[in-house]
Image (cartoon, rainbow, N blue to C red):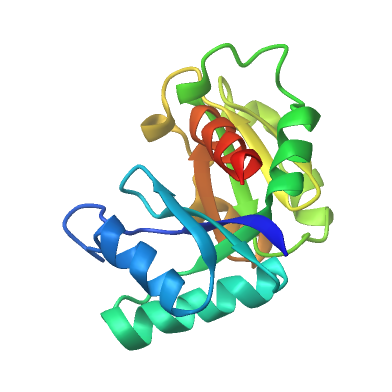
Length: 179
């Protein structure tokens, strides 16, 4: 059994894919997940499971579609993985506001060639770094103004992606550690 975090992409945004957090908690409890908690209204769920994060994410994604009629990608990480993500912090020397510092979670580790082919100058003042299954993005002019959104990375890398700001990732790690 491990503490894990599921990240649902695109729920409760612009009136689409509406899911109450109470419904989401009950859905996961019904699937056998334990100690289920949600954070914010944007589809962040912390839980305990004996399944791998990939298996848990697939099960949650299928249940959302089947039981709630909501079809959204779901990615998951263990609490330990979130701790490693926070510890890696490759942009900590420049990212000074957690609201403007994104972690883009990827469904798998991409081939590094498409990332290496990107000219960082094109995206300035935004800065990005790729580490494993995550891409860290510092957006000094705000996350809504960046070209380096989750959809950009999906198109460039051919993976599923979702992003959370540093403050949210930190809080999710804290919740996972509370277990």
